[in-house]
Image (cartoon, rainbow, N blue to C red; front, side, top):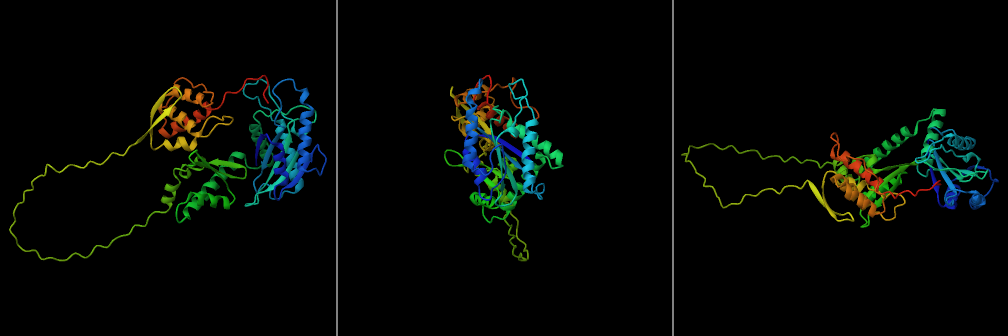
Amino acid sequence: MIMLAKVVPYGGNAVRYAMEKEKATVVKVNHMPEDLDAASIWYMMKHHCQLYEGDRTVGRKLERFMTQFVISPSKEESDNFTMDDWADLQDEALDVLDSVGLIPKGMKKEVNTNFRNSMNVGALHRDSKSGTLHLHLDCCRVDMDGKTNDVHDIHERAMKAAEIINMRHGWKQPKEIREMRKKDIADFCEYTLKHMDMFDVDRFFRQLSFNGYEVNPRYDRQNKLVGYTVGKNASVFKASEIGRRYMVSQLETTWKKLHPTPVQVKMKPAAQVVTPTSRPVSSVVRTPNYNQPKVQPKPTPVNTEFSIDTGDGVKKVSIPNSIKEVFFNEAQIPEDNSLATAENVAHVAMLLFAGYVDAATSMSESCGGGGGSLQSGWGKKDDEDDLEYALRCIQMSHSMCKPKARRRNFHR
């Protein structure tokens, strides 16, 4: 079983999706009257949060009134579940989640939640393709005693809660499930490419979607495909996680390897038998032609040159062709950064790769990032190859392009 969590800014839409999606079934409503529709449930939660707004003395105004959880056992784990079993799992998940205490980064005290004593509603969803069941659970941020549920590291707490529940029931741990689903996606990607008579990336995506996978292509400003993700049963993977051979830059090459061109063998005609005759042998001296120019093959470039505007000037960097696509395929715009583009993130990584640390810091700050703080001695390690170093550079670039966190006494 896996358990995902996030704080949602539009609670009304979340409740409507949970309760009114096609074939959705309401499992249990806690701390609210039964038989309420989605709009009524949302207004009760919102009014409850606003009722206790005046009691808050620290932190900014509470704007996100709901936390959403997705609880997804495997098909085998929930095979014989009744509706009562799903209701028990809903309550158990919240009980365990409330018992998980963590000390968030920058804080000194352990924080806990009290979602079991908060208004919440659970609804059962059925995957339209595979039929796998998963539970959508929407919870009010403020509990029945008027205290706000702290959502620092809520996703990490949800994963720890899932591990505890899996141990109780003898189910597979989330990491095992994730690896199993990743292998399932990789196998189906190979199967799809193998059965395509010609390469067409749109057709590839349609085949994945038709078989129950959620495909989200990612395009740049020129509407060029630069990456995609594939999801199944609340597990989402980037193409590079599934396998480098399934990245956008490698897809067509992978298809060609799965469809080798048949080699046609030409039969040589039978050699005619010629009876040799005796002829005088004369030596022929070839006169060299010094006027004929020698044709030298053009060397294949091994690097690509980029001119990057850092904000303080232009830096020229040379990136090996074997790994340049990594920067563009792995670059993602950090959350809450409305200024940066995927190209900015890729260029910061290239500057790091080329050793221009100051320029990378300057560029990350010019596109809305915090710049980060690189450890002294940043650079390629002795035991790293170019690919490993490039992946480490793109990870650092994501960190540097994140906006600076606002300093507050208590952040919610």
